[in-house]
Amino acid sequence: MNLSTSPADEPVLVTGGTGHLGRSLVGQLLERGRRVRVLARLPGTDSRVEWARGDLSTGAGLREALAGVSTIVNAATFSPIAQRGGIGLADFFTSPSAVDVDGTRRLLEECRLAKVRHFLHVSIVGLSDEAGALPYNKVKLRGEMLVRQSDLPWSVVRAGPFYYLLARLLASIRWMPWWPLPDAVMDAVDAADVASYLIECIDDGRLGLREEIGGPTPMTLPELARQYLASRHLRRRVVPVRVTSRTAARAGLVEAHGRRGATSWREWLAAHADEPKGAVRHTPRPAAAFTTGRGGAK
Image (cartoon, rainbow, N blue to C red; front, side, top):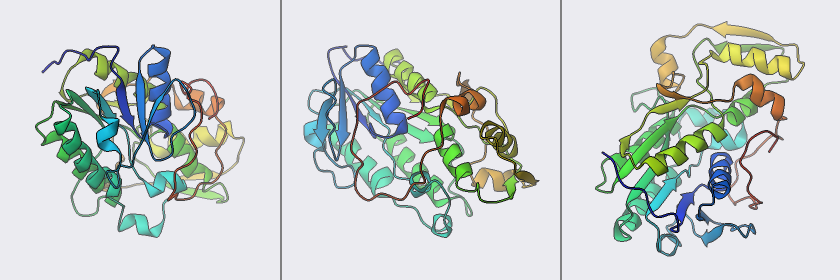
């Protein structure tokens, strides 16, 4: 199904606009001369952006943020693994749902009242609700299904794991001399490439489940780790651990089917330094000026 695009003078509302994907999406939209409104708990100072103070986890500010909006990109998520840059024991048992499920439900309700004409939802590849799947993947699936079952005009884009997250995960084990890693595909992709695809999905007006997007060439996690080590001039022994396809799928280690990003993992590593070790944040970080997210460390 196709839907005519919203007028260029109407703002596109972006949730999660201060995250890695959101920052690149907002930057690219601004580069194209589009009006952009960002929902944020802590609005920034970039004067090119229409800042709307609000919080998906509570519903505060959603109605005001949606005023005059016909297109929304829901890129908000809350992943302790992504924020921390590593997997903790608790991540195998639970994952917060206040943003990805409850927040998505609130947002859908307000979008229905506002008569939003295109709800574009960002999801992840490899979702599964079966026993043994990562709790975060289950939470993301619940949020996605709320969108797909709604009576709003919707589209969903599933993306592979972002390069920045993979780099954080590998940086967190730099202290280990041996790296035992599942010998399964991790179809990582540059967030900037996903942002470009999202803009295409905004503009072409097609609805429904869109093609997934992954990196230029699907690689196994051990292959990705070896390229990381070479780029950082580190000597570690990568030990591939054989896992079944079912086990890999439960962990979200699957190939994306559809689109391919343009930026390779090797190119991304050459342009980005490792970020400082993260921690799970319960308050928003200050929002800075937006860039396209291409060609340099961020």
